[in-house]
Image 1 (cartoon, one colour):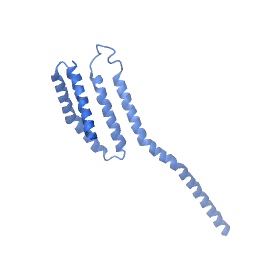
Image 2 (cartoon, helix red, strand yellow):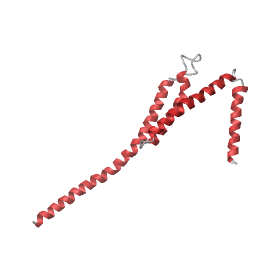
Image 3 (cartoon, rainbow, N blue to C red):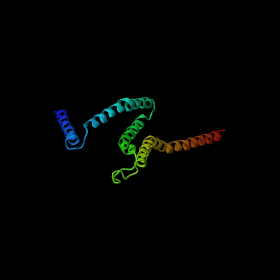
Image 4 (cartoon, rainbow, N blue to C red):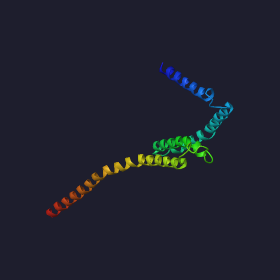
Length: 158
Protein backbone atom coordinates (compact mmCIF):
# COMPACT_ATOMS: atom_id res chain seq x y z
CA UNK A 1 0.00 0.00 0.00
CA UNK A 2 2.84 2.39 0.89
CA UNK A 3 4.39 1.71 -2.52
CA UNK A 4 1.27 2.87 -4.29
CA UNK A 5 1.01 6.02 -2.17
CA UNK A 6 4.67 6.92 -2.79
CA UNK A 7 4.26 6.11 -6.49
CA UNK A 8 1.15 8.31 -6.73
CA UNK A 9 2.98 11.18 -5.02
CA UNK A 10 5.87 10.75 -7.45
CA UNK A 11 3.57 10.80 -10.48
CA UNK A 12 1.83 13.91 -9.12
CA UNK A 13 5.16 15.70 -8.60
CA UNK A 14 6.28 14.73 -12.13
CA UNK A 15 2.98 16.03 -13.52
CA UNK A 16 3.42 19.31 -11.66
CA UNK A 17 6.97 19.60 -13.02
CA UNK A 18 5.76 18.93 -16.56
CA UNK A 19 3.04 21.57 -16.14
CA UNK A 20 5.64 24.08 -14.90
CA UNK A 21 7.96 23.19 -17.77
CA UNK A 22 5.48 23.18 -20.64
CA UNK A 23 2.23 24.75 -19.42
CA UNK A 24 3.44 27.75 -17.46
CA UNK A 25 5.43 29.14 -20.38
CA UNK A 26 8.79 27.84 -19.19
CA UNK A 27 9.77 26.28 -22.52
CA UNK A 28 9.29 27.89 -25.90
CA UNK A 29 10.46 24.91 -27.95
CA UNK A 30 9.72 21.47 -26.41
CA UNK A 31 12.13 19.88 -28.90
CA UNK A 32 15.05 21.49 -27.00
CA UNK A 33 13.97 19.66 -23.85
CA UNK A 34 13.80 16.36 -25.74
CA UNK A 35 17.28 16.91 -27.18
CA UNK A 36 18.64 17.87 -23.75
CA UNK A 37 17.12 14.78 -22.10
CA UNK A 38 18.41 12.55 -24.92
CA UNK A 39 21.88 14.05 -24.53
CA UNK A 40 21.75 13.44 -20.79
CA UNK A 41 20.86 9.77 -21.34
CA UNK A 42 23.63 9.29 -23.91
CA UNK A 43 26.16 11.06 -21.66
CA UNK A 44 25.15 8.97 -18.66
CA UNK A 45 25.03 5.60 -20.40
CA UNK A 46 27.97 6.20 -22.70
CA UNK A 47 30.43 7.94 -20.41
CA UNK A 48 29.47 8.34 -16.77
CA UNK A 49 28.17 4.83 -15.99
CA UNK A 50 31.14 2.99 -17.58
CA UNK A 51 33.56 5.35 -15.85
CA UNK A 52 31.90 4.79 -12.46
CA UNK A 53 31.93 1.01 -12.99
CA UNK A 54 35.62 1.04 -13.96
CA UNK A 55 36.60 3.13 -10.94
CA UNK A 56 34.51 0.89 -8.66
CA UNK A 57 36.22 -2.18 -10.09
CA UNK A 58 39.65 -0.68 -9.43
CA UNK A 59 38.69 0.40 -5.90
CA UNK A 60 37.28 -3.02 -5.01
CA UNK A 61 40.79 -4.31 -4.35
CA UNK A 62 41.66 -1.54 -1.89
CA UNK A 63 41.07 -1.93 1.85
CA UNK A 64 39.68 1.62 2.18
CA UNK A 65 37.19 1.28 -0.64
CA UNK A 66 34.13 2.46 1.33
CA UNK A 67 35.45 5.91 2.16
CA UNK A 68 36.93 6.34 -1.30
CA UNK A 69 33.69 5.34 -3.03
CA UNK A 70 31.69 7.71 -0.83
CA UNK A 71 34.09 10.57 -1.57
CA UNK A 72 33.92 9.89 -5.30
CA UNK A 73 30.11 9.78 -5.25
CA UNK A 74 29.94 13.11 -3.40
CA UNK A 75 32.53 14.67 -5.73
CA UNK A 76 30.59 13.43 -8.75
CA UNK A 77 27.35 14.90 -7.43
CA UNK A 78 29.06 18.23 -6.66
CA UNK A 79 30.51 18.27 -10.16
CA UNK A 80 27.14 17.61 -11.76
CA UNK A 81 25.60 20.43 -9.76
CA UNK A 82 28.45 22.84 -10.53
CA UNK A 83 28.78 21.93 -14.21
CA UNK A 84 26.22 24.36 -15.69
CA UNK A 85 27.76 27.49 -14.09
CA UNK A 86 31.27 26.20 -14.80
CA UNK A 87 30.54 25.64 -18.49
CA UNK A 88 28.60 28.85 -19.05
CA UNK A 89 30.87 30.98 -21.25
CA UNK A 90 31.53 34.65 -20.62
CA UNK A 91 29.90 36.98 -18.17
CA UNK A 92 26.15 36.74 -17.68
CA UNK A 93 23.89 39.49 -19.01
CA UNK A 94 22.53 39.86 -15.48
CA UNK A 95 25.51 40.19 -13.08
CA UNK A 96 23.40 39.08 -10.12
CA UNK A 97 22.54 35.76 -11.81
CA UNK A 98 25.97 34.17 -11.27
CA UNK A 99 27.77 36.48 -8.82
CA UNK A 100 30.10 33.90 -7.27
CA UNK A 101 33.39 32.38 -8.33
CA UNK A 102 32.01 28.92 -9.05
CA UNK A 103 35.30 27.35 -10.10
CA UNK A 104 36.97 28.35 -6.82
CA UNK A 105 34.00 27.27 -4.72
CA UNK A 106 33.72 23.94 -6.56
CA UNK A 107 37.42 23.25 -6.00
CA UNK A 108 37.07 24.20 -2.32
CA UNK A 109 34.12 21.83 -1.93
CA UNK A 110 36.10 19.01 -3.57
CA UNK A 111 39.01 19.76 -1.24
CA UNK A 112 36.73 19.57 1.81
CA UNK A 113 35.38 16.20 0.62
CA UNK A 114 38.92 14.91 0.08
CA UNK A 115 39.99 16.14 3.53
CA UNK A 116 37.00 14.47 5.18
CA UNK A 117 37.68 11.21 3.35
CA UNK A 118 41.32 11.34 4.44
CA UNK A 119 40.22 12.01 8.02
CA UNK A 120 37.84 9.03 7.92
CA UNK A 121 40.71 6.86 6.71
CA UNK A 122 43.48 8.20 8.96
CA UNK A 123 41.85 9.10 12.29
CA UNK A 124 40.70 5.58 13.33
CA UNK A 125 44.18 4.20 12.67
CA UNK A 126 45.78 7.06 14.58
CA UNK A 127 43.35 6.56 17.47
CA UNK A 128 44.16 2.83 17.64
CA UNK A 129 47.88 3.59 17.59
CA UNK A 130 47.52 6.16 20.35
CA UNK A 131 45.36 3.84 22.43
CA UNK A 132 47.90 1.03 22.12
CA UNK A 133 50.90 3.26 22.79
CA UNK A 134 50.74 3.40 26.64
CA UNK A 135 50.17 -0.37 26.78
CA UNK A 136 53.28 -1.04 24.71
CA UNK A 137 55.25 1.46 26.75
CA UNK A 138 54.15 -0.12 30.05
CA UNK A 139 54.88 -3.63 28.83
CA UNK A 140 58.37 -2.58 27.77
CA UNK A 141 59.02 -1.05 31.20
CA UNK A 142 57.63 -4.09 32.98
CA UNK A 143 59.70 -6.36 30.76
CA UNK A 144 62.91 -4.53 31.71
CA UNK A 145 62.02 -4.65 35.41
CA UNK A 146 61.43 -8.40 35.23
CA UNK A 147 64.78 -8.83 33.51
CA UNK A 148 66.48 -6.68 36.15
CA UNK A 149 64.90 -8.65 39.00
CA UNK A 150 65.89 -11.94 37.35
CA UNK A 151 69.46 -10.75 37.02
CA UNK A 152 69.48 -9.58 40.64
CA UNK A 153 68.14 -12.92 41.85
CA UNK A 154 70.68 -14.74 39.71
CA UNK A 155 73.54 -12.63 41.07
CA UNK A 156 72.58 -13.29 44.69
CA UNK A 157 72.59 -17.05 44.25
CA UNK A 158 75.99 -17.37 42.66
